[in-house]
Length: 315
Image (cartoon, rainbow, N blue to C red):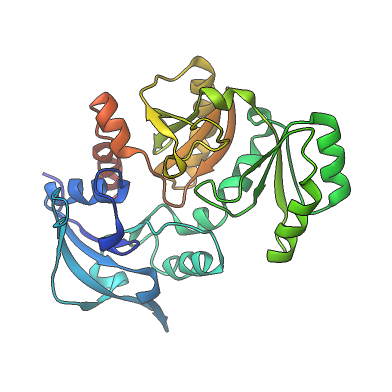
């Protein structure tokens, strides 16, 4: 029998999660079923004092019961370096300086305490930049704030996607068609709000057939769902109307996973979700990937079990 683990889950408020779709909830249910002890804390309750990493945390029990899906015990100050075996870093992006600071803090306890995913690797792998290390797998992509380069890229491709470098959940993603006269205004809006470059990408028409989310566990592809955008919508994210449908992996998608899987494993990325459109890799999601419950519903495969198998093997 596997050792009982003390698991601290760094995530958003328990009250706010949707238990039918939340991957962190599925991970917590599986951990509990295996006899592991669970604590919940919010990233704002994390602290570094000297060489101690602590968090105000609640012991928590979870259940698949809508409106009554968790019970908290009394709050304690948890010394993560002493009182935890595993920390799941599962708060949702944006990938901002607060997120980056949390990775620096958790690096003080990893790998003595296993942080999933590895905090240094997460910090070095923002979704839309990590993917650029595999240019042969991507649609043609430009990262810049320079208008001349953006104009030349549009002149070449006509149909382009413009999105913020550190956005998430499809927020701020624009499909600019060749006859759209709003590009300069859009760039002005982005640059007034942020000093960060933009991501400019060749539009892949196959997005109308879906944006496939493939889940890799310790570098191995283990499940996939296809997310089909709503009519008149360029984004396939489910919270903006995208619909998840059952799918299988193509040979090209298996090639992509074979190309990136060893690097994900080397960097301690136990739970990763990649996005593939028309045979092109568009993002590598390492911060708080989703899709576990959708794969379970369509395929009857509970990938949270594979994730915990991998975690237990490392402990």
